Image (cartoon, rainbow, N blue to C red):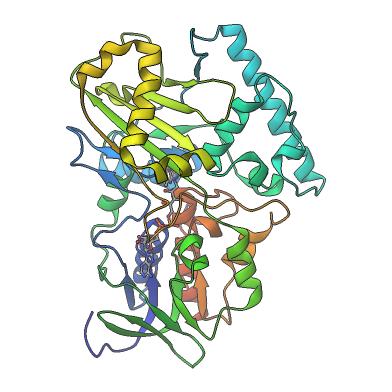
Length: 426
Ligand SMILES: Cc1cc2nc3c(=O)[nH]c(=O)nc-3n(C[C@H](O)[C@H](O)[C@H](O)COP(=O)(O)OP(=O)(O)OC[C@H]3O[C@@H](n4cnc5c(N)ncnc54)[C@H](O)[C@@H]3O)c2cc1C
């Protein structure tokens, strides 16, 4: 970042999936762009740890959701990043035995009824908590709540029926062998970015926008803000003048919940054959855990937790997180597996000051908030990111698509026409 910097067409704040896509699209349209990232690395919540284990480990996003509509699938293919068609863990362990096929089918049928009820409520304009329209006394209710807490990162009582049913889910969730974060980092490696350049203040009241960072001030005609609603809601960036009430309401309506991934590496295969994609340990409370078992045939398990329980575990610290997951695995595979643990690692997104949570979910009654989140202010201050996606809510590719679409909107407002790309909607 030069000092004093000459004005640019566009300043993008945050180099996660959305910000990187925005900066790249705007550059391709011929705009001059400065991309500011507070961290020492790009990717944001798309982050693959390549040091903790003998193999890459996703601390953030992992599955290419809605794969046949997901632009990262084509990107992965073009860059030679392998993926599999493994899915979410489907098996169930009931504490002392595996659930039978009939029980698994019963649970799936219950889930389908819940999703049908959520959709019916949303279609009828009933924007209420998911708990208000789903059966609460069923044997499988806590299982539904547990998985909702992972999909939404908040518990069912905090999920809007309208928001939940707006997600365009094709049911295909494909993980990347070398990690989703690795793919994002590789694809955008050529995009110039100012690292360790935290936007502290955005002055947007005058004819130009000025963004103040510890490395100097950037002046631009337009800005795209892509930081999380956790960061915006906490007031970590000072906007002058303050953001209008409707934008503040949208930010407040889309809080981030908690979701974390706990990795346990073993020195051998301690699980045996036929483990499928993994399983949920089901103790009939939502305070439970699901596991991926030996993804990509590597000797590790990944514990998945969500919602209030994830937040509580994270606050208790990484040792408690790992111990909890190990105890649950021992309950299924026996105490001996502990001898073969090489090391553990876990994410802690709530405590990351540059994100402050996992991903956004609209509060009950606020199901339309993503449209206000995506709307520009005065054709000058634009917003992108997972919270601004209304079709692929809360996802990495949803964030990417909002970044592309918003950059094109900026280019158009500067009088530049852009070529529509194939996957070009938010
Ligand atoms: C544990 C976990 C699992 C997930 N699993 C999946 C999954 O399987 N599939 C999927 O599609 N999605 C998944 N997600 C969600 C997905 O990772 C996010 O929706 C997506 O990566 C968000 O991208 P973004 O660009 O909107 O925001 P971010 O990635 O948060 O990018 C914002 C950037 O802004 C930077 N920043 C913050 N403050 C400032 C500032 N003041 N100045 C400058 N820069 C700043 C941040 O450092 C960050 O790099 C998961 C998320 C988590 C946490």
